[in-house]
Image 1 (cartoon, one colour):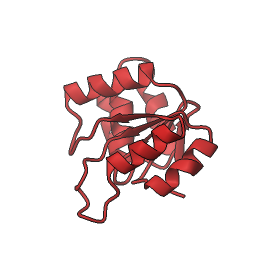
Image 2 (tube, rainbow, N blue to C red):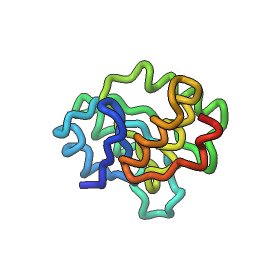
Image 3 (cartoon, rainbow, N blue to C red):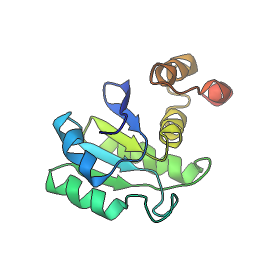
Image 4 (tube, one colour):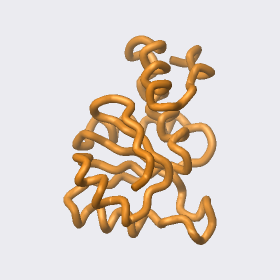
Length: 136
């Protein structure tokens, strides 16, 4: 099973998952998986979204593909914000290490409360987003 890191009661992040991880993700109570890692970014051995989606949907989970590389663009943040607002919770977002997913989560919450709380939630999950504080 992959390293799932809880950020809030409704949102967690993880590094790359595989279709074999999906059963354990469902058993852990997650209702939605958001894929932020583009297919092929890690070469031919990287698990593909299609196989993960098929397994997730077979188990009754929602699957949302919002792959991106580098810093999230405003369009990506809008799409992730909409997915988080509409998707059944709890949500598990994944990318290569989890950093891209938690960064996008943090930026979708910019201006919606205390930036210190966002940075603290990320830190509690093992991610240092202190450099984003001025944007939050």
